[in-house]
Image (cartoon, rainbow, N blue to C red; front, side):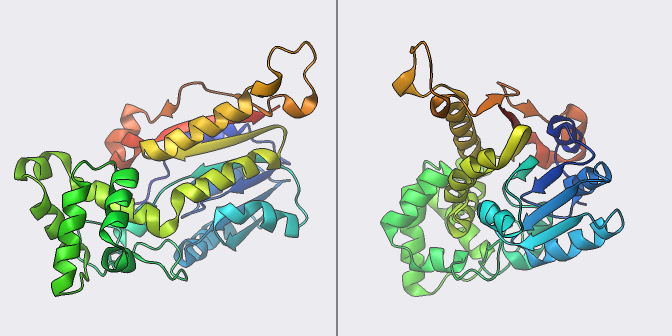
Length: 306
């Protein structure tokens, strides 16, 4: 079953105008987008997704509502460029629902899940050359250790990386459950049961394969600059690394530039571009968490262009 996380909260915070132009950077199965499209009879929706299955399924769903939309099979990091090519310089609202989608996790063949056996893959866009197999089998010890520690915040990164390198000296590591078995052997038994390091290692590899944090660092300034005055950007994150980047970039764009702080007349180019709609992130309700456990870690941050 596919759930769109904090759907109601996103719709409310986008402040949708019936004639507005909106962007869903991660269209998935169009859970959020279908609600946006219903509310813009005189507007237009642009959607982005790297996943061909998502593009196909969301098209079917949105066709039942309206034809005031266009979907691009592309990474949302390219939204500014793609929208300009389509004659769009400014928009009224943007939604980014980050991380891996439920259908991607549920599709065993994609290799995102550490609970089902599959070939190591984890690509959100299957046209990309880098996949989880290459990371696990080709990256050296130092690189693996750094990825696991930086992107997975895993304290046993060193021993896990060492055992991966030792294992692949005998034979290539082909599947998700082979990798889970190596992780299990690399940490104390109690730690494996209580702390789920496999979850953190899979997250780290997925972030590396899809360059997720670099993409996020690039897209947020572009998204802010795409907004019309009064336009809103809603971002849903699912782990602390993403949330930290969103929080830092929103802080930077919502404050007066350090160089001119304290001046009686601040030039326009140094004034804040945005204001924070919520200083603390919006969290999923208890009812939503009961219905969809994935929403437990979700945080929604919202800004408005000044």
